[in-house]
Amino acid sequence: MKIRHSLALALSVLPVSAAIAGPKGQTVPSAPPPAPPQASPGGIWPPRQAPGYYRFELGDFEIVALLDGTHPFPATELAVGAKPGEVASLLAQNFLTSPVEGGFSAFLVRLPGKLVLIDTGAGDLYGRDGGLLVANLRAAGIAPEQIDEIYLTHLHRDHVGGLLMGGKVVFPRAIVRVAQGEADFWLNDANRGKVPAFLGSMFDGAQQCLKPYIAEGRFKPYAEGEALAPGITAIAAPGHTPGHHQYLVESRGKALLVWGDTVHVAPVQLPDPHVAMKYDTDPAAAVRSRETAFAAAADKGWWVAGAHISFPGLGHVRRTAPGSYAWIPANYALNRMPQ
Ligand SMILES: [Zn+2]
Image (tube, rainbow, N blue to C red; front, side, top):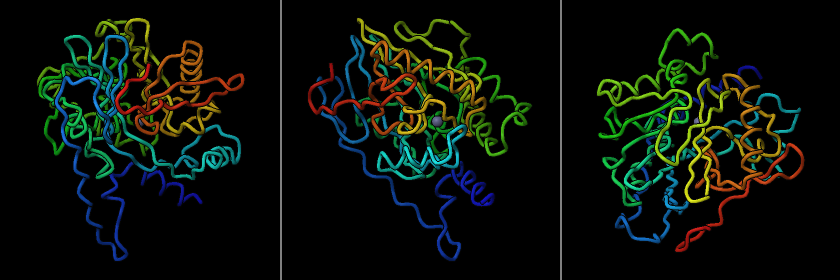
């Protein structure tokens, strides 16, 4: 049991190309990534949807959800604080079993005169399970050179991985921003002993992916409370990582909470926000941050964008009972934007 458990953890942080081996030990060749959809001319509104990106309007802003990939998440083994059998039971109620395929999504915000990308997906750090972000960005009519700023929710490698592809800088102009406390934690090897050994790869990923941006003077951590772009506010939501932040995007009375890893497995953590994950550096704080976000999103009717919720990861949170919630996905629209 113990061996199976460690194996699952090890597999969950290994690139899939490394994890899959043929019956005689040889590596199964990776399939080429699917061809991106035909690029649509930028600026046409409303756009037609295609797999991999999903655009909608938020006041004066345009939001584009971008799929980087999906990856199996061993929810039953990674859950912390669940009642016996609870995770498997909640999954079964949603016709799912562990491991659950979870998305890697990033979210672009087009403000007047500025393009901000929130998170970057996994890049090539999860083999062929990630790395589609740029193709999907281009398909939505935007080139990586156009991105002005990148706001990271935290420095885990499925969020920073997309900064590099094949060791090369993907965003040649962008200023990369994350909370100072988050940068201080993952960029300092002295903290390696403060997390379980299987999270060591998170230090490697953060340091590798940020290195060229730091060298070019384009990595600018922000202080708590510091103003970012007009209409985008960083909200401290610690627990999953020490400096994990959400971004509240507001325009003309509309609001979208881009909540990063506030939720890993929606069918489990919406009904029971007390279920944390072994990836959380402080599970109790992660639970508090999740409860705060759920209550605010439900009470205020905010749109929510989740990095690991089934693509496009856009929807609302509804309170179903005190302390218990449900995820209401955005109603898919081809030619008309949701109101
Ligand atoms: Zn994540």
